[in-house]
Structures are given as structure tokens and as C-alpha cells.
Amino acid sequence: MIFPAVVITILGITGVRQLPLGYPEAEATFQEGVSARGTPEESKFFQLAARHYETMRRSGVHNAALYRNQGNASLLAGDVSGAILAYRRGLRLEPNDRQMRANLAYARDQVIYYSGDNLARPPVSWWPPWLPRLTSSRTFWILVVFYSSTWIGLAWSWTRPNESRRWLCWIGLAGSVLFSVILIIQLRDVRADAEHPLVVIAEDKTYLHTGNNDLYPHAYETALNRGVEARLLQARGSWLQIDLTGGQIGWVPLNNALVDLPTPL
Image (cartoon, rainbow, N blue to C red; front, side, top):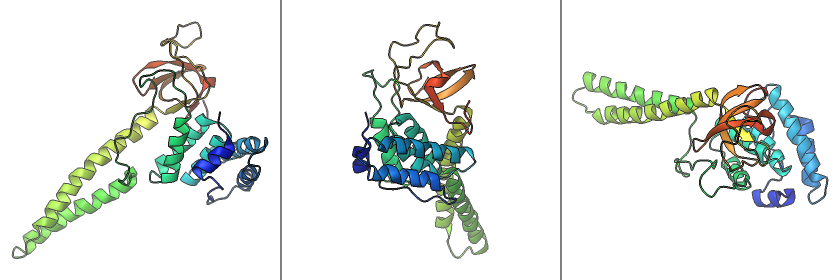
């Protein structure tokens, strides 16, 4: 169970990040929840604020500040699944938001795993924490700079043979290769996100089934709890076929999951 007052203290959540277009209802409701700290009403305010932010998202507003606020409101309302989904959306737009990444880590720590192995646990990131993260657009422009430096170095060497500028050419070439690889990986991930959207389990004790019906047996004996992350393979009726991080595949009811799509299924 998540206690909002404790989360506010641990994560230092004292307010909302101002949004470019503003959304007075959401911001005011969030502040009411902060003001009601330690009272039975605080969770209700945060639930309402999270719904306001969701309404704003569905109206077409998409930015990191919105998702950070929505994630904070959901987390303080005890909705771990909604918080994880919002933080994941926000970090896709602003991967260097350290506070949002810390909040995501905290939300993930609240997920209960029945299995002692790595079943359904999110994979450990290979990216060094001290190294700034790049979006695909930023990587592209850095690649353009290195690629241009390569040709500038070559042109300089051809037009001014007495002045050696080969170092510029080699630096540009090395940077071009490095950031080309990074861009390819990022574009692969973007394509994977589009083809197989993020799914977050929203109900405790959700079992993977071998088919899209309760009559099918459980694919695994271990149940999934709120906050478990997976990828959507396909939707059929009111059921989703998902792929867990460990490669386990099965079907879960649509009502037991949140899907990272512009509009709900």
C-alpha cells in the first residue's frame, strides 16, 4: 500500500511542473491533494488530478511536463500502473529528466513479484547513468555535425595539401560511425514501440492464459501484479496477447491492463 504523505516526503513532490498550455483544474486539484497531506481526502484529490491530466492527454497535449505531473498524481493516488505508464511516456520525450527517472524507479519498487527469478521484471538498463541520454532527433543532428566534419576535413586536405587537417576527417568519420549505430538502435526501438506498444498490468493476480478466454488454462502458475510491464503482440476481442520482458507470452483480459496507445482499445 502506498501512503501519499510518505511518497511526497521521499520523492520531494511538492507541486506540479507548469504546463505550456496550462490546465487549471488539474493543477489546482493536485495542489489541494498536497495541502490535504495526511488526511483521508488526499488520495481522492490526486485521483481526480490524474483523470484531469488524462483528459488533457486525450485532447492532444503531449509533453514531458504533462506526463511527469500525471505520473506523480497517479503514484500519490496509489495507482502504480498509471504512474509507470505516464513516466515511461514522459521519459520517451525527455530521457534526461532525472527526477522523473527516479520516480519511475520508485514506482517499479512498489511492484510485487511472486517469482524469485526474473519473470516479468523490467530489464536492467545498459546505459551508464552518468551519460546523457539522447532522443533520436538529437542523435540525428549530432550525426549530421560529424558527417559534415568528415567532408570538411577531406575538402580541406584536398584544397590545402600543405596544411594537414586529417584529424578533423578521422574524428568526423569515427563520430559518424558511432552515432549512426546509436541512431539505428534508437530507430529500431521507436519502431518496436509503434509495432508493440507498452502494456502495464493494472490488476493484481492477473494470470497469463494460453488463449483469449478464461476457459484456456494458465500459461504459467505465477500471477502478475499491478505495475508489471510487457509488450502488446495483438488484441483479439476483449483480450490482449502480451510478451513479458523475459520472453513469456500469454493472454490477459483487456480490463486488467493499460496500453500505451493514443486512445484506449
